[in-house]
Length: 133
Image 1 (tube, helix red, strand yellow):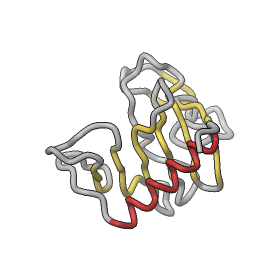
Image 2 (cartoon, helix red, strand yellow):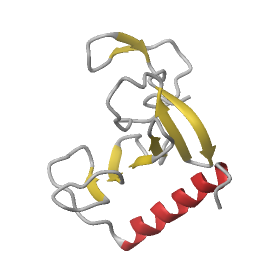
Image 3 (cartoon, one colour):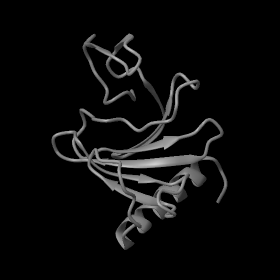
C-alpha cells in the first residue's frame, strides 16, 4: 500500500536523502474508497509531500497530516504521472487552497469549480470515516 504506488516486487529506489527504500513503502494507507486513497507518511519526521507517481491509473491520493488534517490532493493520469495537485493547508501567492498543474510548483492558481466540488466530496468521505458528519 501507499508509496508512489503499490509494488508487488522488491524494487528499491533512493529517497530524497539518498537512502535505499522499498518501492511503495514511503506511505501508509489510512482509507481507500474506489480510486481515492488517503495516505500518510510512515516516517512522521519527514516533511509532508504528495506521491510523485502511482502504478494505478487515474488514482487520486489525499495526503493526511499527523493530526488527521487533509493537506493535499493529487490526481494522476492513465500512465500514473501526476497531472494536478491541490494544496489545502497553506497559501501560495495569497491563495488558499490553490492548485498546481503537473510537477511544476512555481505558482499557485485558484481552484476551479469542479476542483472545489471534488475537495468537498473528499472532505465528506474523510469526515464520515471519522464519524464527524
